[in-house]
Image (tube, rainbow, N blue to C red; front, side):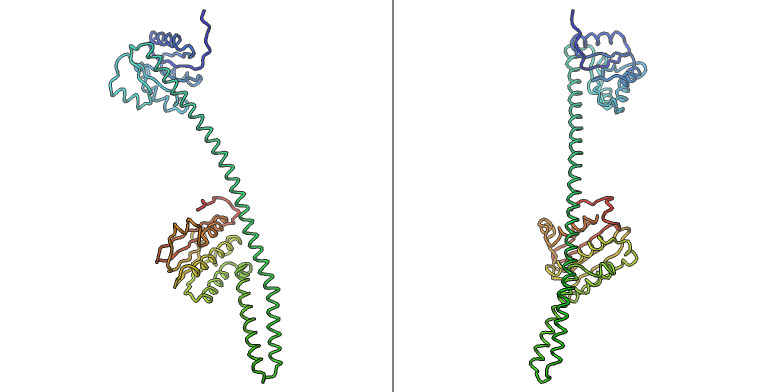
Length: 389
């Protein structure tokens, strides 16, 4: 007596003729003892069976009374729960090209025409099972890959957030250190220079008017101290603009543009229209805007050889927008971008930390345009972060 073999898969057979079902069941049990057989006599029964029974392949008669094999195949392939089941359509005669095309369009994986040799029938069933197992394995691997990608993405996101936090802390520490140095220079060295100027002025007034040489020496010394005091004031304002903390972004930008104009002699035009939105500009965005403008102007002085510079700051929709354009010699943007030169990396990093973006256009002999755009909300509202450039 043959011992019943453990079934590793199920095959669905759908045919409205009992004799055909018996023949197929016999062949499968004889040659594929590892496969269980689920035999039904209509397409409706087959579809209903698949709701409760898992099968690895379906053999469906092409011509049936209620629903033919092509329509049943189409319904199986249209249902996500059964779309992955390989289907072979069985017919008692040769299939014409039109019918075969309809069956393939419906999702059929094979056509079997009776009469067929048992060994060939079994071989075709094995092919269907191999395809099913290969596709199942591929889906399993894909699912695992998606899990790994999700895990790595989560880890990468956490790493980016940590780096972002570190970058923000570094920038904050830099700004705090600049503010401290600026205060100390202003409070300590500034007071010493002011006292020295006062003392020199006092001594100059007490000298005899006939001592002309001494008057000239005192005048030169006072002039040097005044120049040192002016330079000290400029350095302090560069380290940490006091107007930014007291009066806001617009006066600070106006002061910065005026100082560059006076210091470099450049023709710098400005159009600043942010008075109505000043209250919506958070301190971190204000500082970022100021620093990017400062860096852009410094780049123009160092590299552009420009005759005219235009600075504009305004609100566009819900964004704050800064544009700095010059008519200088320009540069090869891809080459400079690749080396992160001209402070481009620093500007983009600052912008990224407040959810903003920096875009740069430049062409040789046609000038350069730097545009900074940032949503008018706090940098800590991380709703949607732009991609790093």
